[in-house]
Length: 259
Image 1 (cartoon, rainbow, N blue to C red):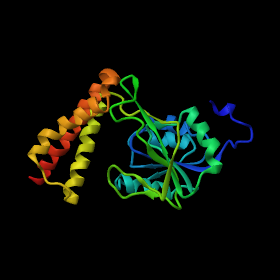
Image 2 (cartoon, rainbow, N blue to C red):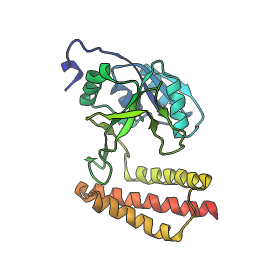
Image 3 (tube, rainbow, N blue to C red):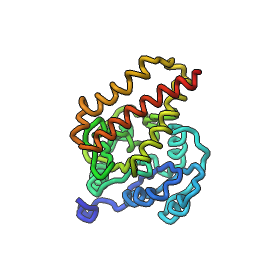
Image 4 (tube, rainbow, N blue to C red):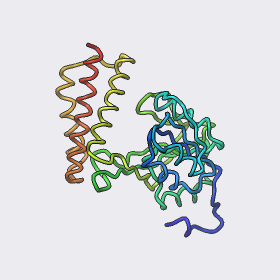
């Protein structure tokens, strides 16, 4: 279903703010913003990009702000604070709403509860296909909420929206997760460092040689066999190996921190 095929009594714009945090997202940002044509307000909170993120934001009609990096949860909360409306749709720059999801949000918006956070399934595109197995789908993300009752937690990584109650939409967000295997490797390196730093800072875990040796294998078996990553073909195998490698890096870097 397209926006043009919706009933005429549905509004073209909603009292809703689209909120996006960015860092060097010139390749993704325009498509992200364009996929939410019903947002009456667009906020881009940037961490001092060196590319054309600012120009693309302003050309797309967004209100552009800059903020030194605070960590994922605090950064997203800061962006939400800048929104004009209490209803917020929070997307990453590499995410899109399909026409079907646009239609579902438009159709349901008037019946949404302010005390409910809305979980949207998310499907990722990688290595030429939509990934449906290996733990990557449906990958529910709470992205539509009213800021009077819901907000991002303070986690520096693996942040989530805390809401009094939740409900689910049916149509997935489209996530263009990595543009290449090299991009996946770089991302795994970045996130494993953040995870190791978090474990070290919070003193939640001490390094264990046993975990360093066994956890990557367990992760591979979980993703490739138990969660049926093999049904995604070669990309499923690449993803499972990448996940195992990321777990290995996390524990190795925790050892490095504690040493």
